[in-house]
Image (tube, rainbow, N blue to C red; front, side, top):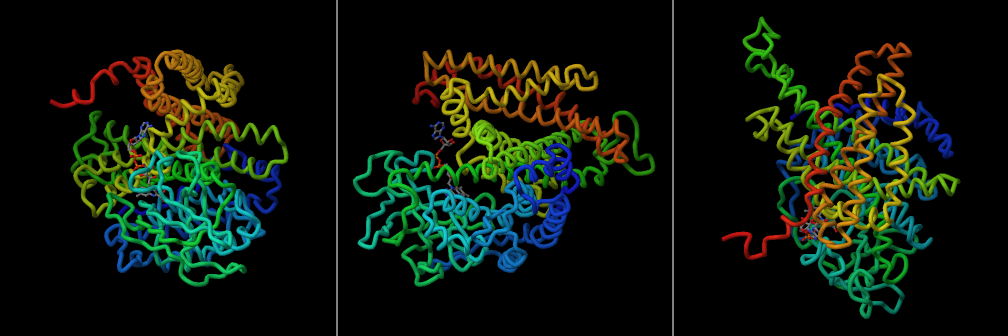
Length: 598
Ligand SMILES: Cc1cc2nc3c(=O)[nH]c(=O)nc-3n(C[C@H](O)[C@H](O)[C@H](O)COP(=O)(O)OP(=O)(O)OC[C@H]3O[C@@H](n4cnc5c(N)ncnc54)[C@H](O)[C@@H]3O)c2cc1C
């Protein structure tokens, strides 16, 4: 298993040098988030993830979770590690001080989430779901519900889940069958079966708070008749203490491709007591709070997978001796050269590096927007942040998870046959990260959300905010010769982004299938351009640091070289996506269903 090392230097580069987190935090009134405090928290998180969480990653995968009579036992070491996680105060970091949180910025906890996910995807999901449950109760729960459920969730002694999926409906939640009937005391009795519930049952926490969607009898069919409920595994007293067992049971756990140490559960509700959150039939709207938080979390999983795989592949490529360099021996005293001399191995390593570092910058930027949404006193600034988040969240979720998966495949490939063998841990990264392209809305669904709902739904308005940031950056740097290699392609790709959008909008007027046929290519095009923008900005910072005579010449030079690689070898993929989507829906839709196979 590759030894995980938290990429502290790069996290600091992104947070402090690229995004000036100090000014950002002080401007939003996060007085406790001084640079010293940020540094200390990141260093502690690095130690904890390297020394406690990473060592149980491979053993957790091999052992998996076990189900016995409705109870789920997590793999050896998980319970102790979770206890340490709680004792270290990690769940409380960015939570509301009124409920026992430390009130630190969301973006700081997001940066740390990457470390947890790289170290151990399965472990990171247990507290990850609690964050979403907390965000939902905080945004939509009553004051009483907040007081009853939040303190223990914040503390980490209870964990949360998100219960949406049913056997016959995942994407199309409007078809759900779980029902919620009003009790005499104002609570509801929930009945139904949810499947694929991450962390739905386990032995890490004292109680599990399920956030469940269900239909109240008599509600309209489809999405407009869905309500949202809090359903605890153990009932909770008025004072917020655990009491008797609720009628919620775990019917079984799934045996899966990856994240074997995270329990994926069938959860049965047999008249379980639940409490309505928000208004009747507005459940999906409330659920979007959970889903948006979770989507950014899943985007970070893509970055985390790329980083972990890159670390393993780089160490191996420097060590493994095979063949000689095409341009003459580089290790003349050895029997062969290390494989890092070979251009194709470098292609894979640099792809991983450019996606991990570029994705880190994009997700850090998005989490700063979330901070602004939470804490800014300026209405215009908040609105701008919300628009950018609406546009960039589906891009980050789908693009970074697809590219994260690609990077883990490169990781296996760099190891050759050894990558395919379990012992090295590279295939586990690939198996574990595939789910990130599926849950929280598949890539196809994110692409439809981006193109149909957000871009075309706003008649292109939503694109303008971010596109104008790109144009502004291009104009500001257009006279700088050293930046031209980045600015010129970005201007071309940026202008084409607008043109492509207009073409699809025109075609969609005649044939709505054109939207679905274009959507994933459109999302990938948008992703490649978005990451190009962040790489150009990082190159700019690196150039400035070099010009100021920084002592870290190698670090900043590597940033510029990686930016160049991204622009020369990754960004051109967007041209292919543009060509595909410009070719339209016809060839995709021409075959009748019974003509697919003869
Ligand atoms: C390990 C794991 C953990 C999970 N954790 C949770 C959890 O904690 N809570 C929870 O509620 N759920 C969870 N899920 C469920 C997950 O969110 C769903 O599997 C996912 O949303 C897809 O739903 P589905 O499996 O029903 O696929 P379907 O909805 O049947 O989709 C199948 C395929 O059809 C495509 N498709 C469907 N509709 C369209 C359309 N309109 N346009 C284009 N393509 C379309 C999809 O993109 C997909 O490729 C988890 C699943 C797994 C495997």
